[in-house]
Structure formats: structure tokens, C-alpha cells
Image 1 (cartoon, helix red, strand yellow):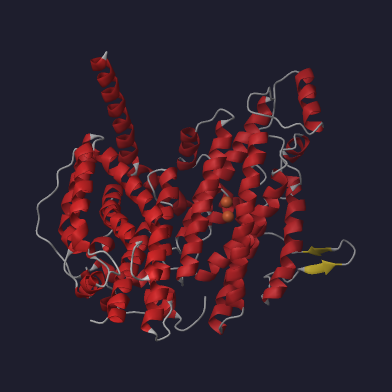
Image 2 (image 1 turned 60 degrees about the vertical axis):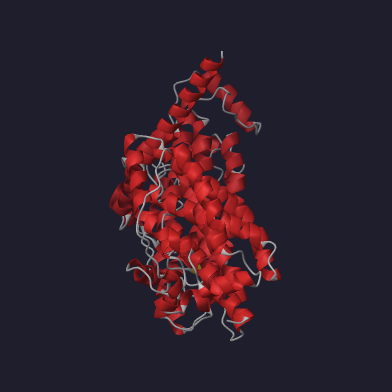
Length: 331
Length: 251
Ligand SMILES: [Fe+2]
Ligand SMILES: [Fe+2]
């Protein structure tokens, strides 16, 4: 998830038709592409973009949930939330490593995030205002992540597919944990029910936006599908998510904030109302409620950590020099 | 002080130390100087909070009034918390946080090692698990103190500041305390006083590598009696926020 249909990707390639055809044959035969294999520049760029956006989202995603770690309502919840947020950092780390196999460094990707050049998922531009938001995020956001990432476990690029297998296991644990938080609230006091409903009201539409623009607006979906970077379109995944989530909301006794939501006998799916695409684009382009603050928090951590990183490098250099001097003396 | 009273008071002291230090560590989540530390610091926080839980639960059993871990963690007034002042000190910069961690973990490592032979089986069991975790905390924080102490000019200066700032809170770790002394006499825990020499040797060795000097200072104490610093109320306001706003609910 978290790459939102690759907004702004340029998947054009300059290679010869023979090269592209040979590459496509490997893809069609379901061969995994590995870091040292020849690949079209457009394929590499698309992946760098997608994996980068995904990694950045994991990292930025630590902030809205981290916002409730110190205020989690019980020791059990506090421990589980800390572990979850730590998992998200771990996902960021494997994804940066997967992107590094394509020739971009973590430093470069970090700089792109900090300067605002690289995007992160719009979902993390929404504030977490109550404890129920932690439940709603686990349930809906990790739930949407799973919908998006399960197909990525079969992505044609080997290192990304393998990273996704590990990530998916943890995301499904997060999703269950979030749903369990919501279950307790939905069965709790009136105040707790209200808190749960309010969180659902605020996170439902943003969760649907996580799948990215409408297929007709998604410029490079076809090429990504042909290269098996994507396996389903944005709209297909969004529909699967709605179909999976409606019965869960019913089980909780909560109401999805969409008066147009209705089961369609013919398609066997739920029809749903119109997404506010203005809000989506505004958020993606940096105008979300918390977009600036998220970036500012990442920049602050990075700037304030500079002396630590410098010291670690300086210390390692001193150690090395001392070791070499000792070796010289011994010779 | 009888056995169960000494045991109860000891459990509360240890649990509060772990909870409050774990809470402080968790404040770093998402704000660390590098991604590796964004994983390592919550991990240490998680270990500490994880260690506080069986201690609180056991305190509730010993007390026999039906209080559970969350009653202790969330539903007491500030004066009832018995943690060391050291662990509630604000995070400061990364160097302060690592030095605070080193000071506490270098105390708890021999503490848990000895407590594995406790006359109390439950404490021995908690110690057996904790001793492995605390060894990692000492290593991790100790390595950082060395890197930062012997790093750049700026990092050396910042570490020296941290040593100065935390020095007043060291003696309390090993000070006389009625409950801990009584529990030590009963073989429930090692006496903190007896761990001082090992702690000093450990810190001296790390400081020698870090090229840091120990600081001379006046001691400040009070945490074990529930007299905390001004920052503690804000920490508890965060920690207890949901429980205080919606009393008596299940989460
Ligand atoms: Fe994740
Ligand atoms: Fe997750």
C-alpha cells in the first residue's frame, strides 16, 4: 500500500523493442526479476518510486500512532501499540533496503522525503484525535494496506515481493489488533461507542482514498499491470476492501458514513458513494490537515539527530585509525 | 516491616522504575536520530514496560486488595509513585537519554542476575527473563555513550553536559530505603548498596573508553518517598489521560 497508484510516476522507457519484448517474456513467464538482471529504465524508475513512497509512508505513519503511545489507556494497549509502531519502522527499513537494490541510497530517499519532493500516503495527513483512532487505523488503514500488499507478494521484482511477504504477516496482526480495540469500544460505554463511531466517520473516506485515484485518472496503471508490478487496479482493490469491511462494521454495530452504500445483488458487491477527489488531491499535494506537521516532525528529528550521526561516523573513523596505528606499531 | 509489606513495597518501587523509564523511552518513538534507533528505542521501552507488568500484577496479589497492573499504573496519585528520580528525568537530547538508560540498566543488570536466586520464586522467574533484556540495554546504551563521548567536539561537549546533569540522581539508586533493605535482608532481592562497586567499575570502564570524566556533585533524592520532580506531574498527565477522563472503563 501507501503508494497510491504511483502518483507522478514516469514509466517511459527508451530501450529497443527487442529488449522490451525479451523482458516482457520473462514477466509473462512469471520469472522474478532480480537486482542484477537487465531491466527497462521505466521499470526500475517505477519501482523506485513505488517502493520509496511505500517506505516513506511506513516511516511517517509512525507519527500519528506514536501520538497515542504515551496516552494509551492500559499497559497491555501501550505495549501492543509500541510494538506496532516499531514494526512500521521495521517495514520502512526493509523497504529502503529493497529500493537500495535498485541503485538509490537510503540517504537519497530520506532527503527526498524531508524536502517534500517524495510523497507519502495521504492517510497519514489526518490527525489522531482520540484513542479510538488507534483502533480505526489498525482496522481500516492496516486493513487497506493488506488488501494492497497481498498482491504485491507476487510482484515481479523479487526483493520487493519478498519484503512484502514479511510485511503482510505483521500488517494482518495489526489489523486484528485494531479491530479488537474497536470491538471493545463498540461494546463499551456510550462514550466509548461514540468515540468509535466518530473515529470511523473520520477515517472511512480517507481509508478509501488510500487506494489512489480512480482508474480512469491513474495514468500509468496499464504499464504497471503489464510489468506485474501491480496485479489489480486501484478501483478493484478499493472494491475488495469495501466488500470485506462492510460486514465488519455491521458486526461492530457501527455505521459507515456513506448514505449511498448499498449491496448490489447483481454484482455481489457493495456500491458506495462518491469519493471527494478534491480532498484527495489537496492532501496528496501537501495540503492535508497534518501534512506540514508530519514533515516538520521528520525534519526536526533528522536535524536534531545530525550531531549523533556525525559523532557515530567520527568515532568509527577514530577507531579505525587507532587500529591501523596499532597494526603499524606491531609490524 | 513484615515480609509481605517489604515485598509489596519492593515490587512497587521496581515496577514504577520500569514503567516510568519505559514511558520516557517511548516518548522518542518516531523522533530518533536515525531509523535504527527508531527501532531500538521503542524496543527498550517495550522491554521496560513489559517488565513492569508482572511486577505490578504480583504486587496486587501480594497486597490482596484486588488491584491489577492498570490500577497501579494509571490510578494512583503522584505521591504514591515510588520510582527513582533518575528514571523520570526528562529525555533531554539523545546523549542524555542514553546515559540515563546506561545508569539504570547498569544497576539492574547485576540486580536481576542476583535476583535469579531470590527466596521468592516469582521474583526469581521475573529476574530470569529480565536479565537477558537488561544485558542488551547496557550494551546498547553503553556503546552510544562511548561513541558520543569519543565522537566529535560537539558530541563530547553534549555528553559531558549529560554527565553533569544526571550526576545528582545517581546516589539515590543505591541509597538506604526501608523497604528495599528489609527485602534484601529476607533474601528477596540483592541489596542495592552492595551493587554500587560493580556499577562504579562498569561505568568507569565505559567512561574510560568514552574519554568522559565522572562529575562531583550534591545528591538529590526523594523519588522512593514519592517526592518527585516538577516534570513528573506532566508525565502522569499524559500517562493517565484516558483513565482519568473516563474513569472505570475497560479498554
Ligand atoms: Fe507497515
Ligand atoms: Fe501496520
